[in-house]
Image (tube, rainbow, N blue to C red; front, side):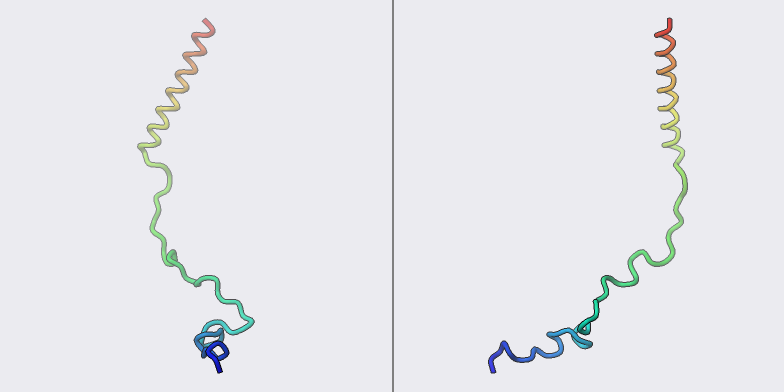
Length: 74
């Protein structure tokens, strides 16, 4: 008998000892992941700083267009 025709043993072929039995599909991934368990309490809404900056930008844009409209009509 040469080495290629010998039985590799239970660890070299699929089956209950060496992995998945023939005809069954192995699991794609584990059922538990890193994100299991309670989540941290997350803050909702925007912080005051970005809201103030956004408000200032909106007011400046509105003032620009109002000033432009006034100067064009004069």
